[in-house]
Length: 275
Image (cartoon, rainbow, N blue to C red; front, side, top):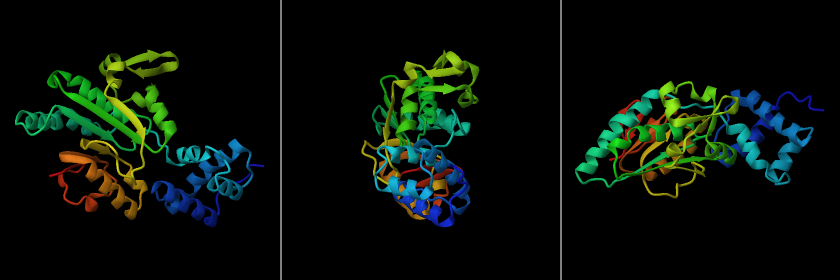
């Protein structure tokens, strides 16, 4: 029992099609070992002895609640606070400068809406919230909100808990750690209430429109690398539709979406703006 090693090409194709239909994520041929390993853990969890039986039970709804665990298993990736620090330096500096200038000219009210798309366990959301907390003196009377969305309910639950191991905080300075986190047993660190306050988490699939007011800034980094072109076009259309006029889209260096961004204007290698 449980001596399975790897999906056959035919099994891999069946799971790949199913994953694509559920999430828009395209598993490349080179991911067969990764996918095999992650599915094998689900087999052990349910004492199922074959990939075929698991596929049949999963796709026909004969494992209640398993779809969410399956999607967690194949989409979860480790992240950390202030990943690609230059993006956060831009957010806390030039982005806020531009927003404040537009507000001073009467072209923007004192609301600030930020969306972290595919936020995983919340590190990006709270990194943005820390930037806003540190800029609070520049934003008197403003009403900031940061929306974190992900397809995985378990990742969203972790984000709502806001408790992280030391390895997630390697890019957090000692000063920020002391100011914005509370030490917990077992070298865990909890995000303080003042940082949590503007943050909201909810489930969302990027292949669906976002039901929310338009956003001033959207972070969607290192996500599109898992999508094929068809899915990228759909997801990017929803992202652009969700941007407010003058809003910014922050992307990852390998997302490969520059040619599907429509009328957005490129401001740098990672930054695009809506007219």
